[in-house]
Image (cartoon, rainbow, N blue to C red):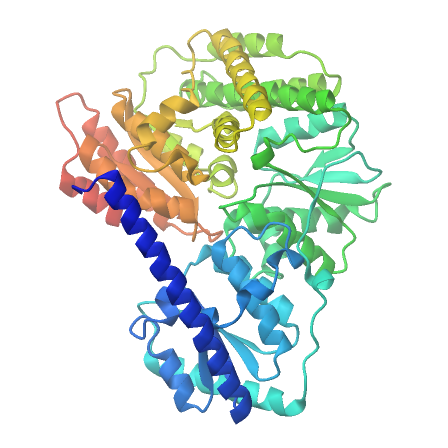
Length: 607
């Protein structure tokens, strides 16, 4: 921008000083407003919204003005002394900035007889799908209004709902005080895995869940995996969710509830649940806490345990530190092995001599790996044997199909029920696919642990995580070579980050950085004909990828489509996949054809 470092620092200092001055004035304004409110005896309505909504009357359709006309005082959330409440009283991982504000605001609203809360949310806002439930729990029986505003919202409908809300809070205020909820009664807190006398239930995502369960059994846990999901899991989940939560949350929650309903009374042990987690930024980190709250609300005795990526999944209490490291390495080997088995399926199934052979081999060798993990035995020979078996089922007379890469949210791209058998749909349309492997995320976690150790200047953590990262890479390469070139090797994490770094920081902590990296790498690779990114409806990382993908598609002249899923068996995605495959077949005829900008734009617009 033409300015030197000192000028930039000076501008930053002045900006921070201006911000501090603004906050001081805001706090003073808030104290004055509350003094006037209590003197007048009027009711105040605190607007739970991000500033760009609550302070923009064009975006929120003049909600503050309408509330004032109805005789109540609209109050910006930031006018409350939010710093007086510790969000960790209510959650062990309040990692979103506004989450802490909503928790503090909810507590302060509950304690003041003249205050009520009104949330202004937007269609498809992922964080609000969890944050507003927390706020509602904290407020207990006190009315908490919610308005969803988007470009289709009608002013008349907003006015009607505001009138009803004001009538409700006026009636509630006349009826008397609300009880302040004890933080312990609504606390979202999840422990780490330890040896226990309960049976640990893991939700099925992909065959990787089976090998994780087997590894846990090998280290003294009685672990079981729920059956593969079908429509019944959504019947269970939809009774206790609002529909705005992301699909993986609903599928896993429904799987737990179905398993508990069908096995609790017949089991010889009490049940507990396991869910992978994180300390941000994806909603995944809040799955365990919210699902536990649902169990408690339903009176289900099923404690929840988690393991977080921020600790490299090394926070399990399975014995000594070396026991935990050994468990992580065994699980890593098995995860890579299952990744390779899946690649062998995808490489051979479109060309198999006898239909169904590839799937049968997948089941056979996955079961063998599980048996080895339970006895803590080696699995290298299984991968070598599997490679030879898969080679033998290919019909060499069939020509290779156009190759497509599938990436996106890890659960959705891996779970056949949630993505409506996306891989098989692509194969039915005449394509061959590669799906981003489970190992991709685990390697990124290892790389982030190295970066975090550098940031925190922790030499011990840096050495340990660097060594573990190198060991993981060596294990992966040693297993990949057994496939004898039948499948492609996965690139190192640094390679993917090289592709994504110019568009998104590697420290963003979400799968978006991996989807952009792998997608651009595929687009740059002449062997790939296109990219499909999958995401749950309302997924933040998926939205980032979708916003950038049209640029990548135009740059490389290949189609890149983004497909969303929300559990509804709709046909729009199938239509888009058919059009996607048609364009790829046209471009793969060998006559120098390439996808035109109009072709790519029309493909993006379908559905």
